[in-house]
Length: 302
Image (cartoon, rainbow, N blue to C red):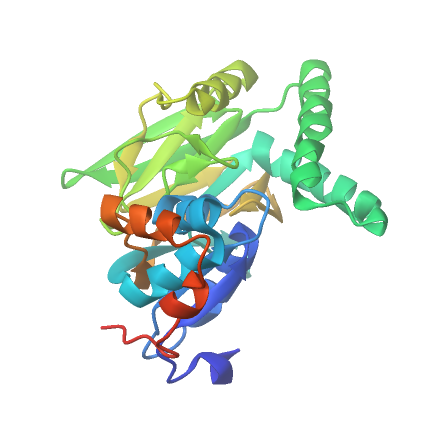
């Protein structure tokens, strides 16, 4: 991976959030990180959605992707890290879009189990998304029978002051991209380059359902206000399933000490699609636009 990425002008990542997150976790270790672009081929595609690449792909296919590579602009992209310490062990996890503990951690575990079971039939991505429904119903049923809460102390820095809270949560969510769970807009004023991350602490399952439902309404976003900070510390008094960018990441055990902070900002190539570009791409759909737009074999990225 390092030899493939070193000294390149641009890295194009084909896949979903899990694939993008994995590749970025290697890129941050390079001294000189090349810009990266995304061809969204996953289930959720929240990273591609928040960076504009999903819109280019859905509306114009490869024409939109190649035009975005040719005319796109570079911006900073925040990459975050979770460090979990327990006794003499240390676990480090890198993520781009979001990290969650509680309900979504269990749901990702259940989705992975169902996905592996049905993988033998080669289910397409569109149908694969439906597996989240039985996974969610199973977690809802388990929560009714045996409600689980994450008992923890949380501290963070806000406006130069150190703040703290102690509570029981059903769901803890850190979100960088604004989009969550395959397209839900949970925070409208998100930024991928401000060095801040949004924290949502949800008391129970219905609060979590409210977050997901409001985020899915057209033209709306979640009404639950987040806490923004550049650094969080957590002391867990109970174990919790957790996920990283939609992929199950195991269990954070009881008496675990967790730190979350900005790891590094790396260059991201963002597509440029204004009204004139969209009209040009639509008018050229019946012509050989792909050949025309992809004429530079290696686009110059600054």
